Length: 207
Image (cartoon, rainbow, N blue to C red; front, side, top):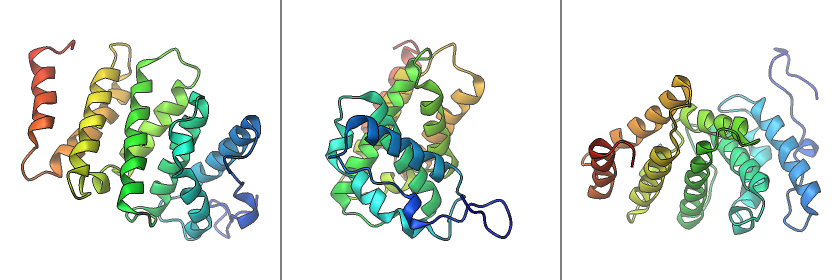
């Protein structure tokens, strides 16, 4: 891979963005997802050539990835989406409100996997959490219309509270707290559904 004149930012070519067409054999699909994710991970926020990843983003919005039987396919699709959100930040790639809703719900559901500390995919889930926290990715989700934001926020808070473990590092817990704090700060008035979740944790922290 070539690098930019600064020597630090990769100079991406369109051919390096690999197909993740759902028709690919599963092993090939996972391999391409993994390679795309490594490429995306190397790129900074507001990357100049982020438009190269528009096609990948649109493909990953397919429900095929959200309901795939393999956890690793789902997770790497989620990480690629989170990385694309990061390199586009503070904006988002274009997509319909319904596609955005489903994408953010998918990302929110992936957070429950942090509960499994011994899972071989745990370090990748940790990276996903870092990514979502870094550019405050759920802010656009909170601001979706027609109660979509509250729907997403409810799942994020529920999954983070259900995932947190005593064995988690303070750094991981702080990332969780950061995401929850950012979401709550977006509301002028916190919805009752979120208050219920918060009060349940205060009354019964082990719940």
